[in-house]
Amino acid sequence: MDFSKHASSFGAAADLYDRIRPRYPLEALRWALGEAPRRIVDLGAGTGILTRQLRELGHDVIAVEPDDEMRRQIDGDARAGSATAIPVEAESLDAVTAGQAYHWFAGEPAHTEIARVLKPGGWFIPIWNVRDESVAWVAELSDVFDGHRARTAIDERTLTPDQFGPLFGTAELQLFRWSTPHTVDSLVDLIKSRSYYLVSDADARAALEARVRELAGRIQGDQEHFELPYVTYAYRSSKL
Ligand SMILES: C[S@@+](CC[C@H](N)C(=O)[O-])C[C@H]1O[C@@H](n2cnc3c(N)ncnc32)[C@H](O)[C@@H]1O
Image 1 (cartoon, rainbow, N blue to C red):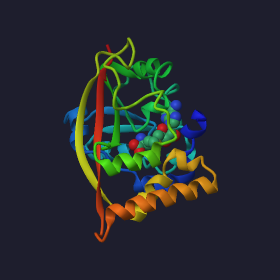
Image 2 (cartoon, rainbow, N blue to C red):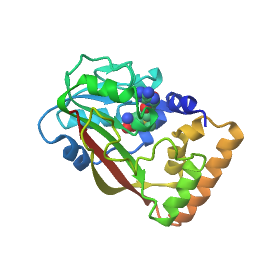
Image 3 (cartoon, rainbow, N blue to C red):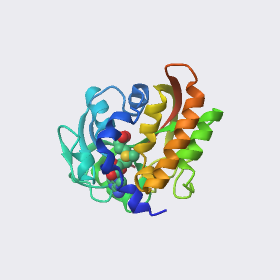
């Protein structure tokens, strides 16, 4: 796959992205950050889904996002930047969070740049909402959503404790199980916010949409909605 084309594809669907992508479980954010207010950069902030939740919990959050269309959706302090150029002073942060984003910049030189902006002992916190593929129909859905993707670069479910390099301590991982209601139409909207759909041509998009409609229709049956189960993977690693 053309990695950079995928990484920069989201802006074209920024409104939809903000409306349809899942929020993060608050207990995962509390586990990662504790209760005291922290000074945080939310890296790869997108439209600010995680940024908003962190602010609602009382944290002081600078959103950093490379895509202009995505960043435009964020209220408050939102800066152009990326994982290799974070526009804040050295050793000025208690934490750097990355919601659904670390896989786009995993490795060097991002690890060194994230360590630069953290205070000693500050946390790097990558977090992902992963559909719970232990449920059979969800595994089937993932074949449609992610069937194109060779999970070679990074799999958020199997990161190693030393994943973040020599400047960081051993990573801790906590899982949080939850679910969110969907309908056929909202599940179609979900695929329309994904990079694979966004970089596809019209025929491929129509085929993806048809497969999601068929599967979601089968799961919904005559109910008004159905639950899409997630497991949130929250990692936390402190700067040495
Ligand atoms: C799937 S979105 C996640 C957005 C948001 N954090 C959320 O939780 O909804 C991934 C974001 O990472 C951004 N991104 C891609 N490459 C990046 C990089 N090298 N550094 C920082 N952000 C990057 C994309 O522009 C996109 O907004």
